[in-house]
Image 1 (tube, rainbow, N blue to C red):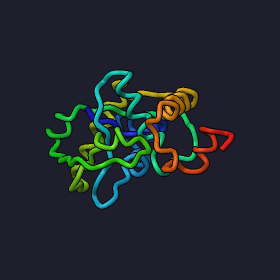
Image 2: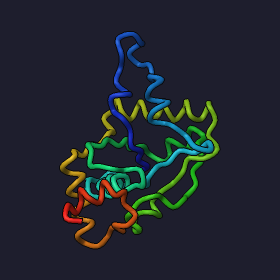
Image 3: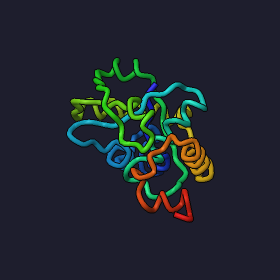
Length: 167
């Protein structure tokens, strides 16, 4: 399984579009590529393992706070069937043990991105979206920090202050 953070609201139908349409906001906001690549995280469809994806995302270099987070989970064979290629890359997270679980979907073009959007829309509509609340995210990060799994100096200063208010 592979997981990606999404903004669930962007995948919700709008009255001015057909019910099964994929909104442009979902594609441009949740499937933003860089160098024709899209970042994903390997996982099992198990709550404890999914928590590791939430932890990796919550401690990424751009994260400045603890927010409710949604991830969509998709079977890797679905991506292969759509002709999407993946490449293992080190993930950007303050948890060194999770970096190797990162993959990029590579050599994406409009056709492959459209196929990916259709797959993710199907996953969202069939409840393959997992959510952790702001409090759950903070607890995951705090527990990992207390166990020494997080490289605190790699966290944004704002997040580090929220994690250890006395710092």
